[in-house]
Image (cartoon, rainbow, N blue to C red; front, side):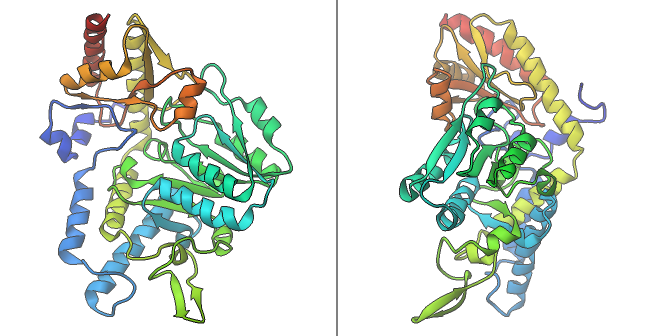
Length: 407
């Protein structure tokens, strides 16, 4: 379906200072990080100019203003995800820290030797290594769902892997390397039927599609702000309130305590139990501004525009000799990963950079996936709503020229 006639990409781009500063830049590295609209930068600056103070512990008016801004940001995240309660939102440094929080707190307290964790071949290293460390420490077994030739998950194998010892499924909502969108509804329902919990890594999906945690019926969901038009250094964990209530602290320090004595310490209720130390205050305000900004857009129009750009890119790539699209699963996200018959992806990326086209090359923190695909890496072109059809045409022309030079 073509983009909505009402969608004005020029008006959208005008809201991003970096794109104004670099008018010739074609930025196709959005899966790594997105740019920030002016309202996000303004929100952070305004916090420092008008409300800068530490939260929760002081009696003066600036502290009250900072606390309200910080807790307001928590409520914004909860509203954006349609969480049942704001105290189901834990602020972290990003999706990586959120996954580690679940592994250290929930995993250590709930899993026993012989229990099993199911992962998929699509996962980012951040959704693999924490579970490997936990498995080695606790005597757990990791099971891995493989792929079909188009990059889809092998669902028959998934259902075979589920069993009485399955305690957790940890799965991406959108592959950062090849764009596959796993069928979360089917995966979650099957895991729950076997009594397992489910963690969804939504780092890639959150900028491209609405996420409703109550409808999704997962148990944990994580994301990073910088991939959804927000600041770096902050992200969030959503978890069911009853799970958070039974999870012990994983980092110790100020704020997460209720009372400290040398005889023993008691801890705050969630979410504060998991937020030791001074939190990322301005970043939380910036994240809230980013989510409010995105909520104020016509998200269906943004998604339609991204999908049309991706289709145009793939149509053009099909006409270039010696180029192979890696990952062609139905319903994939706005991301295209490429391998070349007669060129190394890094060389192609360098030539594109010389034309002010920003891409990413390598394993994309998904080395097990690349091994399964028998590749050392790919060139990744990841799209966002502020990209344009003219940029797609320019990239295709640059790729044609580059491949001719390298052939």
